[in-house]
Length: 285
Ligand code: NAP
Image (cartoon, rainbow, N blue to C red):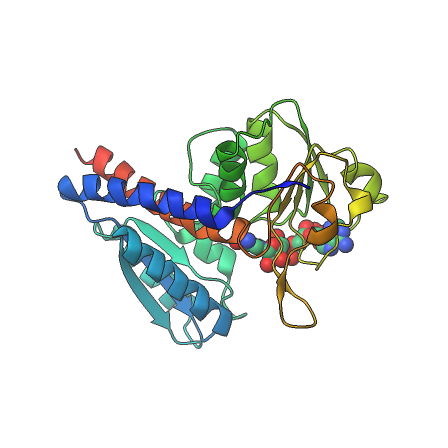
């Protein structure tokens, strides 16, 4: 039976800590603010944005939402980003994905000033992460690292296996785990004999989006298992990429879904907004 990594509880602890920091920043005359841009009417995005706005409200961060019509042109989107880049009262800018297909999301991410890029998707932040410089780290990988730290799970010298190589989760995780001196192996859809690799993992991080992909026989006894996946099973229930019921018997630590990595993502977004406001304050002292 493994120890449960309680992301919900940890995320609340982080949010509570941020409340105090926000009070300190406000006392120095700065009101931290997050601006969120949404283009079109994506149902899931609306829920995500609502959750972000609630978290901001709880912590004391100002929140401004920009809902653009689905026929918005690239010029209009870039114009809004430019305006938000130049506004001194806005410290963090987030472009909610997905955006309609006629728009170039990478061009939009590139346009966000890297100092306000609280999602960590601008190539400047991605590059800084890869060379170990201070930067904004994409919120989900950042949350995974924070979990491991908070549970005092040793990373240095450990075999870390990451399944998934997306730009928002898998790739930044490679850099984060390398920085922590893990020996990192990355698996993806073309990896052969994946179970031979995952069985070597002291820390196994799974981010692929396939329900219950990781089964008990793929995991080493005593491994730490972090499940980033969010999927719906046939009954409409939220499940991760790991077969939790069976893998938890073998793992030393494991994250549940829901209540694991998910809540950490928003807590780390809030952390990044507060950091952006602090950076602004220090630069303008
Ligand atoms: P993504 O962009 O679709 O990337 C999936 C990755 O998994 C790809 O690198 C893909 O390999 C790999 N993959 C797919 N099938 C595989 C297989 N059978 N064997 C090995 N690798 C396989 O997904 P993502 O955005 O990283 O998200 C992954 C999961 O995490 C999703 O369930 C998503 O909902 C969840 N997620 C959760 C949070 C959170 O806050 N908890 C945040 C973000 C994402 P290729 O590169 O070869 O195609």
